[in-house]
Image (cartoon, rainbow, N blue to C red; front, side, top):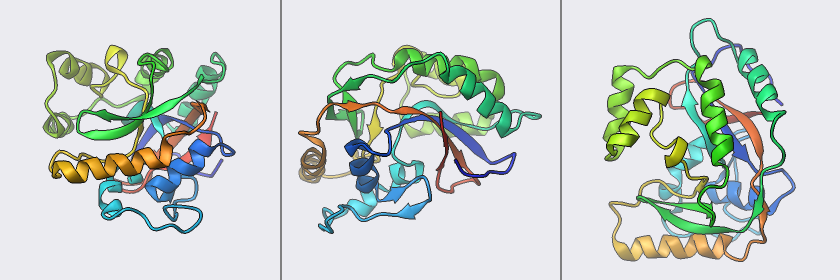
Length: 233
């Protein structure tokens, strides 16, 4: 646990693997950054070079750190401080046991690659609890933020309803537990997309079933800065 001012730009609630797991080590090296101390990491512990273009297509998920989203980034409401959020997370986490231990597979989700459990509903109840129970602490999205979110990708009518109600379109029944491996690959040529998929499969295929982690609080100190792991619960 690190010290943190009482206010920061945004917070997020993520699932993160335990320190001593292969999933933590392989994942953070895949992104090239440790979210705990915001330090860069080599692609592989043995010094093997990364695939061509690696720095570009992991740039977006690298900023957020190795994680699976439970409650997407949000600002605190006026009058709420991070200690209020911590207290809510302690209370929430006390009602949940360890997340499942399951095999994971490299999966195409929309226009990006992710590492996902084969069972689509894994973690859905926990993510829903995080969204519902922490909503009162979160500031609603502004009109500009709604417009930016809608501009990222086409949303269904239901996803837009969830965005307006909860600040993120992929919650409730639209939630899918995943660790993001890349940003959008939409504009890349199919052979390059295939090569990236192969590189991810070489890294993560054959990984023994892994615990899906613990609840963690992440912080974005200022707009556009790297998210850091503040505390595990």
